[in-house]
Length: 436
Image (cartoon, rainbow, N blue to C red; front, side):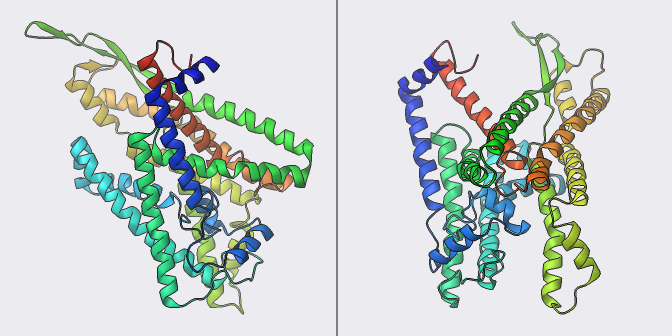
């Protein structure tokens, strides 16, 4: 293992790529702590240190921004607008036939879809930065903190803040693409990895101070066990065997080889967790607006939402969250994996599954396997996502519990993918890679 790491830094091309990636990551973290114009930085720091809770409307965005959202920095939006835009463009393939045609055109179509994603990212960044500045002006960004977060609320200053945060979103997108082209790994994924990992030391330190060394080491053991579980499940796959018949074209023989279709246990990744979290935030948003309009008299449905659908430690909230994750897992996989398309491609190239006829029977078999394997994958996602909520209910450690939910899934997934890419580049230059 150590010899493989030494070989990484002895390979000039690989060393240059890793160094370039680290420089971009450092610039990204630097932008996450530089405040936007006309932000009262001392008051923001005081509010951040005085409260560990944010409204659920901002918790997920703050996680993906590495804490930059609550600091009102120039990178406050983080990578979340790009993630949302990518998911929307992917879902629009089912609704808009033109998008599906572009997806099937190959490199040229993919380039156009990427361009649409960039435009949508800027639009979402503009919308979200406007919302953030509006919330900061109203004083609702932090709970139990009444200090002024902005120097003043003149219209030109507000416009400059919105433009700066939107430009920061575009710059983050460009930095991620630079890592993908000239660095190691997927740039956007590595920036998300960096944002989440940046909060780990502070979270572990808060557990040590608040709960003592016993709980601290218990959390570390639980974290190691969860990492092992996530690695095991993320690497697990159902391999559907595929045989290709021999074809003779001229003097050459094609086909005749055996391969397989890898169907992962967790094909949906972290997207169902994001969907479920966003959907559960909507009732809280509606209740907040309804209560703001009529502050003297609270409607019964607003009280119900405030008591049961905004508290992560309530069993009803956990149950709805878990069921939404399971349902969105089936939904997302159904629109991203098309068994009929896979069966048609196999049929065109002379491939077949042993014991299954080509065409519609193959599509039905793939659909059957996919449905069966999605169940344990969705239950696994729900279990991982509930860990911070269970920690909140047991030891009141939700805000400082680093292992669980989207964080552990992204950290392990991106880490595995990056290590695989480094390993493949090592194998191109040496007989041995980073992994065995």
